[in-house]
Image 1 (cartoon, rainbow, N blue to C red):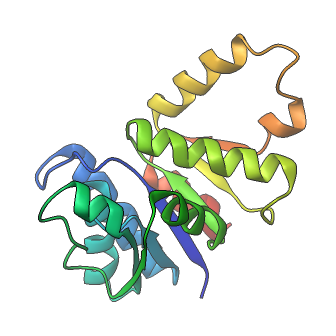
Image 2: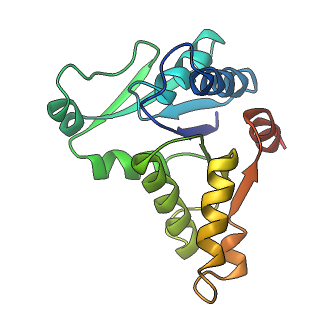
Length: 178
């Protein structure tokens, strides 16, 4: 079964639009036969896990004892069926990036940006096998477009083409189902 890593913020709470969006992608991915992998904690990670689990899908939570020691009471969300725990954030991040067949980024902050940047960089240099990197929504389109508009001569066209921009999770899942 193909694994899709879903990147996103830990901030969204149940009942928010971002949480509902993440539940939707988790559900749709599971219904399409994909395994969902997340960072395993709350927010987008919990919502994507919940959506996938309630649709009968397999959910991998990639967690980190360093984060759990840093934030007291943090543990894998209840929807994770398989937990893979690392000691460091670096190991956790690399696992989410490398051991998936595709990556989808929903809204997020610095952590989500680092997941996107690392995936893009490793795809660019060929350190990880080719895979879709799908960025959902205006946050990514606007941010990356602004970056690229000031990166003339720094990012080749073939490396820009490693990113796929979509307007919503429905479009992301349709692209993965291809």
